[in-house]
Image 1 (cartoon, rainbow, N blue to C red):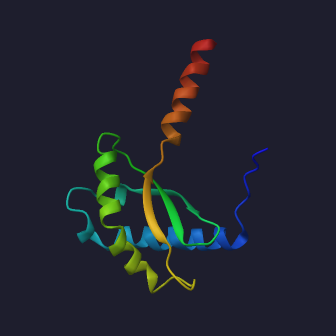
Image 2: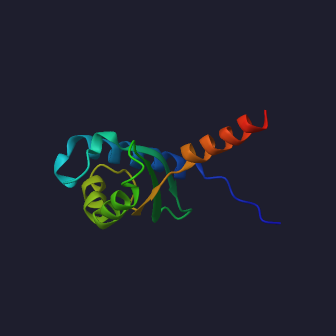
Length: 119
């Protein structure tokens, strides 16, 4: 059987801290995005690896059309974001950051529409 392990308290704590720091970075640093308004970004979740060396950051935006471009730009500038948040992070090292688009809202709308058609 394939049992997924629940994240440890340390993973959850550091994940929430990274989420907070990156959110503040997006709000305060306007120069990072030339084509996007960083105020419309939402960090939905941060998932850390068990060794705390890798972080998957799930992003949601208001604009569905520019998601791939936004994610590519974020991943290209992930080293800059990583160095900016490193000074405020309480862990021994800063995890490598990779951004992903969170499509859970579209998925839930799709399921909701299917359920509505069944009724």
